[in-house]
Each structure stands twice: as structure tokens, then as C-alpha cells.
Length: 112
Length: 114
Image (tube, rainbow over all chains, first blue to last red; front, side, top):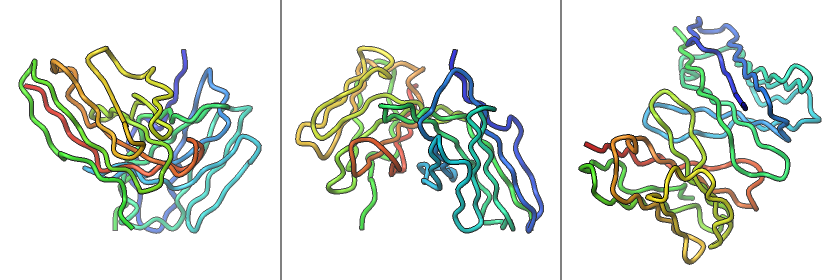
């Protein structure tokens, strides 16, 4: 069956450190992968999109990698800040499709 | 400009009641999606509209769920004869093109069925 798994444990890190989140998938061949941030009581907010033929994408303090051989994406938040505390969701999209298939999310808490 | 809005933000229904949840997407957005999010889980796809056409309703859990977007803008998700397992947050998202790329989410409607 198809599965998308994110870090099972919540991540607690010190301000200024790098947070690394994993997204592993099985029985999918995604055309691209997206990362979203979700705060309590709010809808997800888009952060980054990476295509199957791209290895890495960056946006400000965020970096995403995509390894289709390992079937894994890594999401990094560098120089983390308390304002980065949220749940981060990865979502896959298949070729010729449009709907997002989400993982369960990883909750990140950045301590000042 | 205004983002995606949803109403009501909270809805409490007694088991067996019908409910209607509204989504106002970003003006001009072609694609509209509905997702269901259980506590501690990621959103799960329910249905997809491209303008007024419902192109995919494969995620609707039962025939008690019905969605429409008659004029290609506002959408309504209706749940008939609500059950306790329908309790969740219902998220609406829109995107400017034909489904590809970033989706803009509303704040969601939290439905509690007693």
C-alpha cells in the first residue's frame, strides 16, 4: 500500500540550530513534492515545491532535497527561530494528477 | 488581497443532522479542493473542481458527502445525516491553474458531531 511517513517524534531544538525533517514514501512515483507549514487552528501554508528531476531547492533559511532513489525528501530549517515553531507537512503529487497526498506532519518547537 | 475564506469556522451538529460548509476561494482561481483533516493527521483529499466541473470525487468517504461549485467560484460541501466519525476539520484550498502547483488553504471548518 502507499505510505508517506514523516518523523514520528516531535522535534525540539535550540534557537540557532538546524532542524532536519524527513519525509519517506513507499509505492509512490511522485512528479513533485511540496512542503507546507501549519500553525494550530489554521490551514497549511505553502513553503517549497521540488520536482522529481531536481535534487535541491532553497528559499531563505529553508532547504529541501529530493532523492527519488531513496524515496526520501529532507527539509532543513537553518538558524532556527522560535517563530519557526509549527507543524510541517510534506505532500506528494503524482504525474498527471493534482491532489496532494500528505504525511501526518512533524511538530517542531524551537526554544529561545 | 483576500485569501481563501471558509464559514462557519466551527460547527456543532447532532448525529443525523445535515450540515453545509462554505468555501470562498481566491477570486479567479480555477482549481478548488476539499480536504478532511483528523486530529494529529495530515489533510486527506476529498474532491476536486476545475471551474464548475467536479473532476474527481474519489476521496468522498460515502454518498452522504456531496460537493458543488455551480458557478465556478464559491463551493459548498454538504454532509447528510452526520455521524460521529465525520468530526474533523474540513479544509478548502484553491490554486490559480489547473491543479498543478501551490495550493492556498483556508482556515478550515471544525465540525464536531455529538
